[in-house]
Image (cartoon, rainbow, N blue to C red):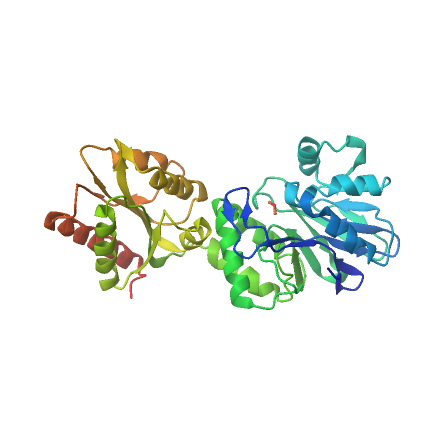
Length: 395
Ligand code: FEO
């Protein structure tokens, strides 16, 4: 890859991973990802911000060969997760005098995850600076985006901030900067939903903290660099707000069409009331898409059949995911069908320990959809509509 000078003497030197399709062996990556690293050349010292995933170290080395300097003094670690830090091991080998610069919490993480010796660190805490001569790096802690130790690095002379995962996107493209705003927006929202949504309240504080800094470029560690910071900052403000939309997210699974029939009837009733429904058949769904729609929805309804005497494992998985991602939905319910006996409600509600939506009476019936079942689904759709109306979000 050709390196790009994004500001005077600041180069994007990271790696593109066009082919990666799964992160954490869990999160689908429809557009691959990038591991961004940035070389900052000061009048006296040189720093590298973050490295790359272990599988792409060769690409980082190739890119560094094209840089106009041959040594690195500081390896700034904004985040110790391995997709950004694994390359540090090789860098420390190649640059034996280089120091890893991070916070004390970052140091602790790197010593645990990469076994980097203590004498290779130079600790800088929140608000402390490091001079490269004519460029000054300031450490800004931004915890829980999505690990506890993450820092951003601010360079005041160039009005640029390096925010690691925050404002990032899993989006591999040949260009360094944002070129396709809708694609960048949806990729960033997917990324936010998958790892940052559980920490929404802390991100509110981090955003406020970053607003004190004067920058005109955001360089994250995944995806394109933002030349219009307000584009991604405004998107984050929308996602972290308490506002919800007139939407029902409906993850469901059906074995013998009973739940499928319930879901189809229920969607029809909700749509008649002007409510947008986002159904996700869990047999085929991309959980990233599901996570993305959880960012805004006012209501979540899980659709589940019984397997043996419990809920279908995929319904349990979806409920677990909802609980882990902690969306801001205000209401929740269940629709389901069983063959002879099952505690669907007790089992699924029991999983939701970290979120506390108002629970609307579920519709759980035995066997195929009946007129009585339709009546109950009408009542559930009505109840959801009334709740949305009280929030002032109906059309
Ligand atoms: Fe991109 Fe949390 O690592």
